[in-house]
Image (cartoon, rainbow, N blue to C red; front, side, top):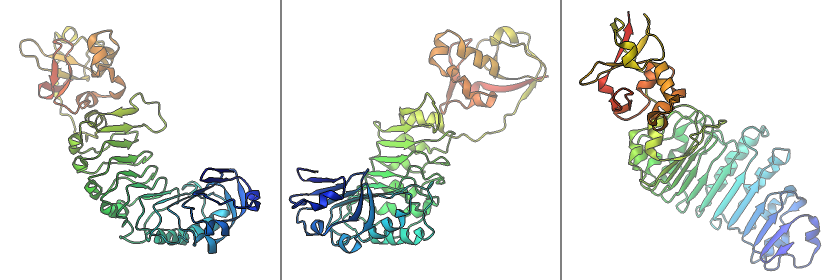
Length: 393
């Protein structure tokens, strides 16, 4: 069917029609279509054809014709079947690579099995792509890429969008060359599941607006100088535990947002948040052994702690210093009970985060700020400097 300047191929019958390429700028092989051969001589001869989207199945690629196409945009979906080998092999025959502005090749992902010789094909593919110096968008998703042919692969002076989703990149040094893409605005490294960190050189991308790290399940840290990325407005991450987040993230633009998703979870904190909120809630704070002061159970312990348990020998608690009155004692159990209290404190303050609290140290490190939580006895914010830890003897 020819609609305006777009030809959507739904079967081989289209090739029997006269002048089917007249005025066609874009050819789309429909995703539910299987054709015997592709492309055709008519496509090569077309003076208007600029864009090709291969979404369906091709039984035989005409490599001799494909390399004669002078395209600005090429999209190819690679299927996880026997056609994979042929598909990748002929897509590497990019003719006139300097004409190409957008290239998208999407494979079956690392969960599918490639042919044994596919690694050689990937290397060949990447070498051919490196010749397309005028690319503005490059998407190489699900191709099982773990490394690049050489350190000079990322030399595309006009590239603004780069996607390397669902590959096998684990060595951050393989991504060092991305720093050369000075005009890059979007970088997607999502679902490279073994990637634990990014090279700090990525922070040299001053024009980068969006960095996507969804599904990087083993992520341990963010780049130390991420706060230097003045243009970064959207950082998308997903992890189920706290990670090393540099304090420099607080220097990001005040309008920047962290798009957080807890993989495989209905976590209520999913969604967009400010860098400060993200930093305070997901920064990994190394556990420091708590030193306890041995103390007898105070006579006023039960009344001054609003305790929901009786203090016994061997219990541990926080001792909160008060300027003009006896110290307040708080246990983990007290903290959790306050979370359920129908009070303004319980509704508005971090007592609500009772699920994060399993021991005294968790209470102590809930916030990244100086003030930790509200003292239930005085209704004033508690500072870490006013906290001691006691063990009753």
